[in-house]
Image (tube, rainbow, N blue to C red):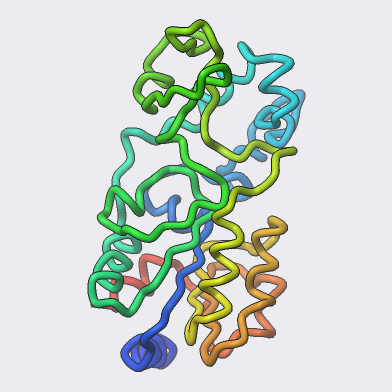
Length: 238
């Protein structure tokens, strides 16, 4: 076993207040397309950027076209939790992992059984009427034709943080958990999306672990740095 994996196991074994901060790399293991990867949305030919097509402005001004793009690219209802999700559920049950902070919107952490999940960018699993605030499931949105409407005739909007919108209260909760953690494990994120990435800078605990295929701008802060595929790492964390 790689020495860095052994060190990660030692850190987890000796920590009692772990926070996990994950990005798109966690979801790609389940077959979900990311934005900036080699097969990501940025690589697809389009007249407009993904940021514009998934922006609040585009939602309200071009709702029909927004939903065409959203349904095509954000529907992950057929995807299942992977080894990272299931391992984190195990850590939470052992009371070592206090919170999962995720930039992903697929809801797979909860599907795997994790309870305390802070979704910085919302979730496709929750959808609300913009008029009366009635809840609608992801199935209703993705399996319907055209713009999803509420029974009150209001337009339904995904509870996803679109570009141009403020982050939810989960961001403040994330700050609190990271501030009190003894170990922060950052995995599957390039740490380029602000303000979420800035959370790494406020960590002052003992162990900052960064696991990512490619280098990040925060690698110099890590006490343990692992440049590897998440599957290779988490397969050794039984």
